[in-house]
Amino acid sequence: MLDVISNTSPLQYLFQTDHLDLLPALYGQVLVPQGVAEEIQRGRELGFTLPDLSLLDWIQIVPVTALPVQLLAADLGLGEREVLALGKSRSESLTILDDALARRHARLLGVSFTGTLGVLLRAKSVGHLDRVAPVVTEMERLGFRLDPTTREAVLRLASET
Image (cartoon, rainbow, N blue to C red; front, top):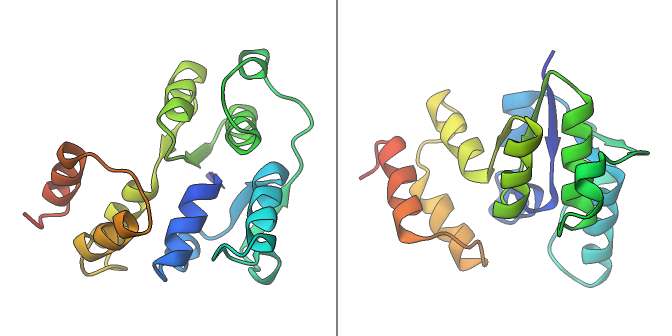
């Protein structure tokens, strides 16, 4: 069975756009490394609109005890390093990462990944989402960085251009 492992930003943006329910609908259980859970909790304590992971029965928080040597010196946050380490340690896994540097490391490590936009595209393709464009627009309003070329490509893939 495929293990799906999420970083902080997909949880944040899907929650803030009221689409967090797409994750269990698409993947069932989602693994969240301890470092990601701590980032989300710290953000909640600072007043950011983030999910309370303890209330989500489809989230499993997983400790990460060892990082591959390639990630020790990487200029990544703890959450990204732990997502990649967990993805590397589980052969049948899909990580959900938005950070460009983390995705580059995923490629180097041979870790399968998608991003929040990939989740939205998959949700539309299986009938869990009617339109991708309004969600993308809301994510951008919330601070999700997306260049115009990528935005256009995503909307084309969603057949919304």
